[in-house]
Length: 114
Length: 117
Image 1 (cartoon, rainbow over the protein chains, first blue to last red):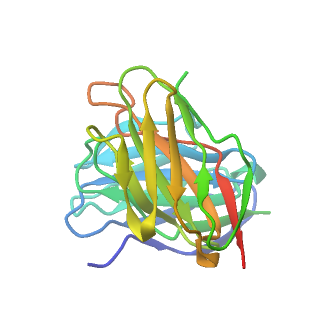
Image 2: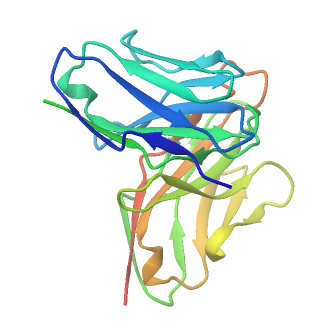
């Protein structure tokens, strides 16, 4: 089976712009979660989607949003980019959203905001 | 607040020696515990998990972890380290169903493992 794929792998944006990141989960997986990884804050949970519904949300401002499509693919959007949004954004999928299921991570999208 | 702690930023071991990467957690209820590994410029790879049952769980690449409820710990171990084990290791916890944070993985800060030849 193909793993979790994320596009693009690298992005450079300027402050004030917006960006959309894409994630394709492992075939058959219905839950998709997003995480932000930075050297200072580590790995932080952004949100989780299951069957096109946001089921959980982390402590991020409203500039961060996401959605999931009927084929389980997910996108996250960040509007009005700030320098502090520079990070590795990781997407993870799992078979279903139950807490005993391990999540499988994609390679990430490296976002640099200048 | 729910949290996971990895008290060592870096662990150094010689190849062939046993390794331990420490993890403690502070959550209410009975959490589910996970270990992930991250190689440079890669996403996280799942190593193993504890859900219930035997306190010693075995995972990928010869790793195992011991769950200790009284000490709220979940240390990662390997009997004989390899240079290729050098990477960043994350401990994580998920909360049981019914919690408002069920889907959320709470990560420790990570421990860099350096295995020297």
